[in-house]
Image (cartoon, rainbow, N blue to C red; front, side, top):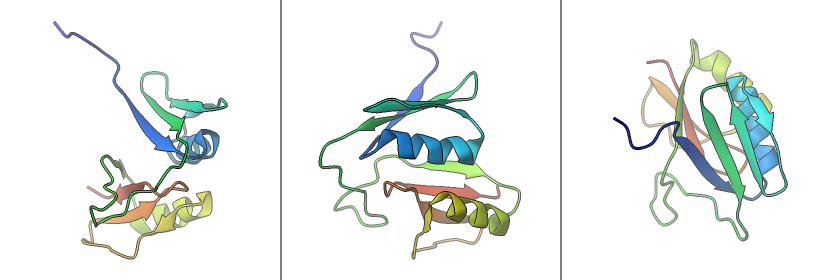
Amino acid sequence: MAIARSPSFVLDCPDPSVLAHFYGELLGWKVEPGDDWADIKDGQQCISFQQVADFRAPEWPGQEHPQQVHLDVIVDDLDTGERAVLGLGATKHAHQPDTSFRVFLDPAGHPFCLCVD
């Protein structure tokens, strides 16, 4: 029997509402914003965002400011997915190590990947 259930990732960021709306649009999940905390939910899963004073974005692929966690999401087509996330406010990272996925930065600077497999 499990000790716990319903895990949720929490991302540090300067503005939880901005990041929740970004990922809510990306995944089609309901956004529940707050002042220093926000959630996005699909009915079973949740990702949370907490405000951190003096937030410093991770630097990838370097480790001076490690990413610590990142999100991979599956898309049907990388080009279509790229246009969509750029329209939401993502930035395409200069370092693209493979052709089966693309690395982007969310509005707070967290790396995330669009993957086709």
